[in-house]
Length: 219
Ligand code: ADP
Ligand code: AMP
Ligand code: ZN
Image 1 (tube, helix red, strand yellow):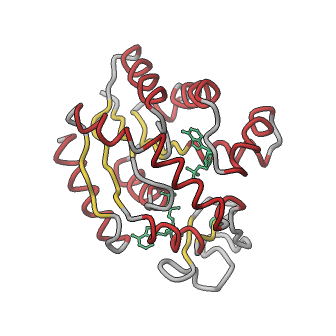
Image 2 (tube, rainbow, N blue to C red):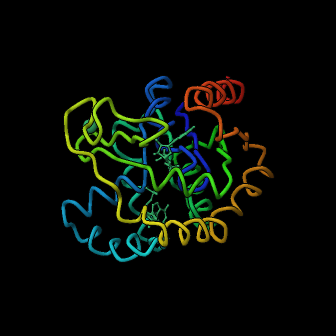
Image 3 (cartoon, rainbow, N blue to C red):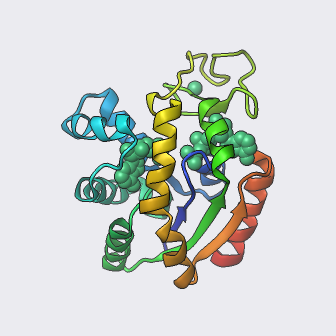
């Protein structure tokens, strides 16, 4: 039976950081909608061109495009045993579409860990975020620095700051999250799938809380 886990939380909560760690422990494919969009942007695909304006403004890419992209991704062989979803779903329509596609494949969501972090902390997190263009690893200038400033520990690539991590865009992304994504907290709570984890704890603490919560649900 395939396992599907949805990581929920505002931008900067630590979804990507945690997904990179626990996808290995759980042996599940890490499916990040933001990473897929950024890959398309880099390769200048039609999808990338379409998504760019929305991403630069800190808005959501339209549901139909995003849903089709994730559907294709989840059909790939590395998702045969399921997936750890990071950044999808982000709207009630996306959540409904996910439920429908899993239903079609005789599967369902096992659990939805919600990584909660207050807005003031998010701004500090996103303004200090540095990402590796080669391996995708995410650092923080203060909370999770690379061994040598500006250089990836794993492959030596020069780290970059995302354009949408500039302060005005960050504030807008948090507003968009509050309006369009936060209703999913209640949606999944009502479905009995939500487990809340305190995302303000140190990275390793959040990891152990997440794994504990997931093991309790998935068994
Ligand atoms: P998300 O994927 O939810 O947008 P990220 O995983 O990219 O968030 O994390 C945002 C930033 O916060 C990164 O710079 C990351 O290194 C840092 N970070 C993640 N988790 C923690 C934590 N528990 N404590 C401090 N900083 C963290
Ligand atoms: P993230 O890497 O999760 O912070 O996402 C970066 C950007 O990609 C977002 O601000 C959106 O523009 C876009 N994006 C990522 N996931 C979704 C989604 N599920 N629905 C719509 N847009 C998305
Ligand atoms: Zn790297």
